[in-house]
Image (tube, rainbow, N blue to C red; front, side):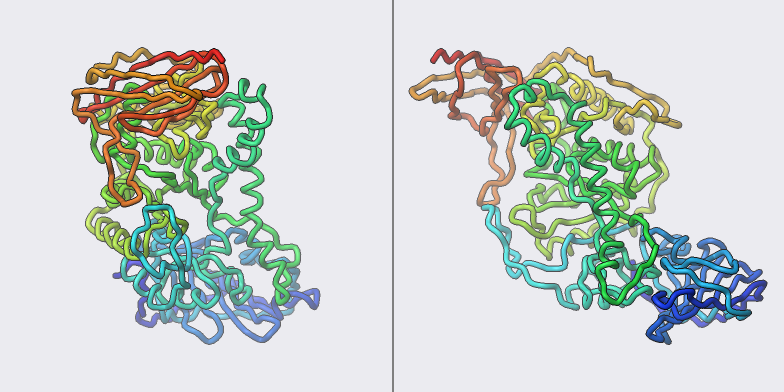
Length: 615
């Protein structure tokens, strides 16, 4: 059985012995349906067969609250929707089912926002299934857009690709490669539906049939980085304008702003479906109103999953910037004094711990995405590791400069994930350790290894609250060393943590003492004219640190990581990495330069130097 493929099933006539059957007609002339028949059978089937105002017809048949689900549009095939692995029914996921399907018979019922009154006795039989569509709601795999690159040659210099709209052959290639969830326009939706794919991105489909299609996921599908939006549109503007706010900001202050911004983002995305329907001249939704239920959050700041999954259906991690084992693991070791091995499993162990823990506590789904700047040697393993850890969402960003994963790579990575999933049934194993950290603490954004909470230099790790993430990382390191599987969550007061064998709570007063035993490191600073400083670092150790691929796509060893602090406590700047660096001092006062290196065994060394600018 092919993933998400549509297959013809042998005809099976399902005769329902009716205990109730009635025809309903609208109270008002503007109602969506001219009439419908509601049949409740003692066999467990409930059937809803409707005639639209334009004379079109459709029928929906549900067995015992979702054991089986059938849909027929007009005189087309009677299609049954089943899970491609478990065989269970797959129901529509938009939400608002009680407003779409009148499962309880009465004199008057409300359907699709309009009122209908019983007009007489009538019933219908459940028809024969003529087509079975096998779907994978446990594996949404696909790109972000419905266009592909004209020239798929990798662009590492930050320039933009040219794009062209996908054609039917592209959707066929995606389906054959294991893609299961695609973005579409109105025409593309026909191709996706025939190929047995989940699809989203248009609200111009035949109404109201679109509301009853399990394959249709809505006009929008995700919230776009609400935590990053909080930083960029709320925190950064105020930090730039208010010097006192720069001194006063804390993770708790950022968290409070995030909660407000997230509420507005959720409301906006959740209302997109109803808004799109209201905008259509051929649709009258009457009093129908519900928030789209299947939305997920596509988000860089992994810690936010603990909050966001209280409101959305899933959380997909976005790896912003040039991330990968050979960049991120050395940064963690140099920033937090950990000694993680330079292994490919370290980054997903940390990231997945946040996502899996939040999903477990909220009973929701989680997943990861691959971006163009992710180290290409890491991407295949990150996908399969997420699958092994329980992920159900796997997406690829396929546009915008360095973020773009070219179409051929999307297909190759999808095949890799598909083949792995076929060969490895999911495990029910759970993490035994829970590491609970205060709300508002995270790995940051583009500089996720450098200890900038919320991606803000004002929330750098050397401030008074900087010990929290260091303590959390040290607990993760200990767990990895003994093979203990761990989750990480924000420690809200009302949280109930269930059946974890061990829980480690980290308070905001955490100040772990770390003894570094890395290679000897020599640092020299030369202060020149116009406040420019030249710095040089030297070590005989076998150190390695890369900031990602350069403009030619080559990963070069920068060896040393430099930071500048001061003169105020909230002041911090990242100096471009290298053996020799140049940076300029700003206002008068005392500065501290931090230089770090880490060898290939994960052992780090940090050197501090002071500078003072008098005039």
